[in-house]
Length: 119
Image (cartoon, rainbow, N blue to C red; front, side, top):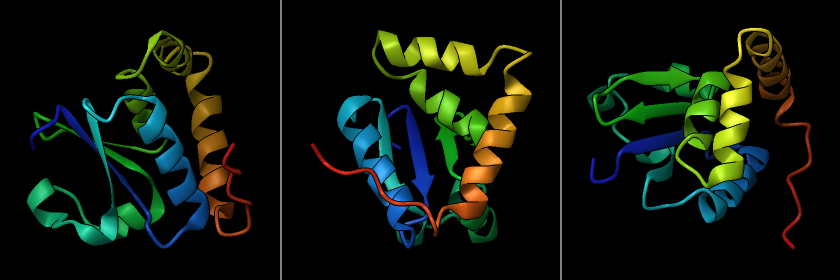
């Protein structure tokens, strides 16, 4: 891995792809590489396609694999001040269960959700 972290998303999902591109352009591509799961050797990265099909993954240099809302918070933590603030909020103990539930709902409905529009 040539950057500190790798964000892995479902490349078959238009919603996921659009948000990955949005974040890649705003959160610093120098810190986090953003790739569709279908283009990677996930076993070599310490995870499976089955897991990548159910949640976004953040894999750090030390090979730690975070999934779901924790992966989103981890990705945000590499970004500019506003993203780091959002990451800190998502990691607060009272917010964490809400972030997980919100993430799970979005993940379960991602094929029905519209992709964000480019501005």
